[in-house]
Length: 141
Image (tube, rainbow, N blue to C red):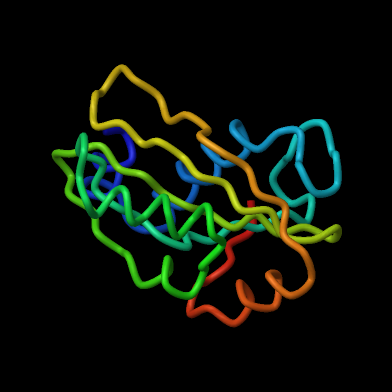
């Protein structure tokens, strides 16, 4: 909910800061390099890989997580569905000097509920190359 409100109220730079805050909170310590607390300007970057509306027992949501579990990053990246009045499942790539980690996040619509980490996947070199070939933009944390 917080992120959806931010998208409506604030420009993209402010939204990026809110997303950066969420990523720092959920991905600390960094799964790739082990840094205890990810901070702004420390070389970590993130990019949104995919987002899906998270409704219970949705065929689309099941497919979203199937692609995530199978590390089908190209197919997963094609999913970019978001509705401001619904929970979302999001997949982010977190990049640092030690590599790329992919995290799955639950982003609730409820105002007083916070985003939560669903899963973390450390990528091998071949998967890093796939992520880096996607049409995504990494932003500095």
